Amino acid sequence: MFTIIIGRVVLLLVNVSLSDSLWVITYGTTGLLGLVALYSAFLVPISIFAFTPYPPKYWFHPQIAPAKFLVVVITLYMLDNTLNAMFNPIFIVICGGITGLVVQVPKKRKIIHQIPHKDAFAK
Image (cartoon, rainbow, N blue to C red):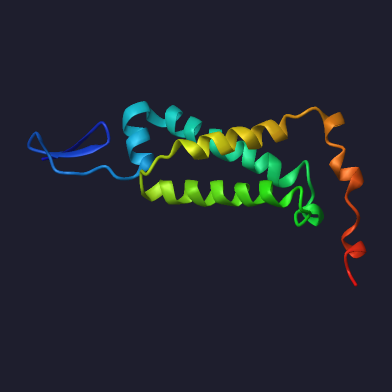
């Protein structure tokens, strides 16, 4: 009686569901490969930026803090989009900017050598 056709629940050939979750829509239209590609496109650059180029002791520096803030915003956006499909292209642009910071040539990352240790800020 109940069947699932392309991410929809169908009862006697009548659509009885409303797809509101991004993962359901993506899985229904592009399959598991599309679902993995969507989430990895957002979460892989964030994971790399969060753990490799700039250690946590530099996260509060004025030159790094805005990028770290955007990493948190993208993470919260993807968590929200898991249950709600409110896709906004500005977050794709932000994720592209973070990717640019991650794949940047190491010689251009001179900021790490210029940032004083966190104890230098203590008074």
